[in-house]
Image (cartoon, rainbow, N blue to C red; front, side):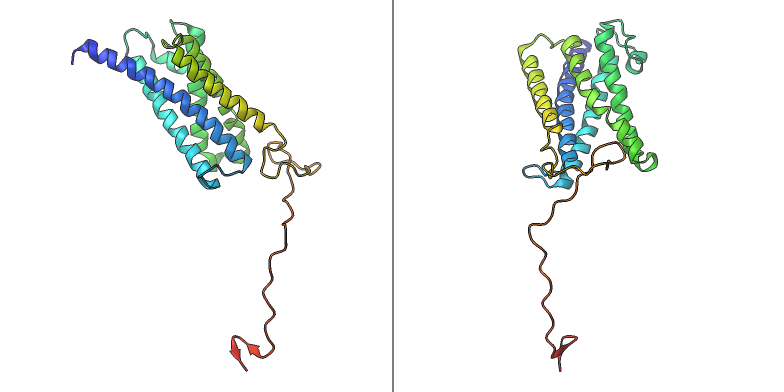
Length: 224
């Protein structure tokens, strides 16, 4: 394989990794909202939603690293190592490339704080984790304005599909019916550590059955 063929292969791989990374980030946002609601998804129990959310985020980081790494070594992208860390310093479309760099920095911060969650505490971790909501629009704008596929119909269709999905999820996120027991009255004056209102647990439909009374003639399972 010639050097030209290798360069072309790396270029197409970087582009494909970027598109798949956008799809994964959309999935991560959706699963994060679903996990927050406490509801299971079709075919997935509650604990599996969080596990798939975490693994999708790690896979997105891997593909993002592949996307950036290949572009650093691409002679046409003209991307320097400093451009990967510091936003808005690239020679090519600094604003739109800088948004991608900013999304990368935020994603790394979210992953690192998630790995150190047991040391940071829930409140600090959650405050940083809110940055995940900013990563997705930054990545979308980066792809739409700086990617070589930005003018392609298929990429616009993928971007619109991702935008519609996230918009619908955000509408659900702020709705009263978001949590599993969202129709219940909010407990006045009660919030969690990051300010979310605390809702009371629903009353059970019926009481749990109690064990039948032991016959008087029985003592320890041995009839007298």
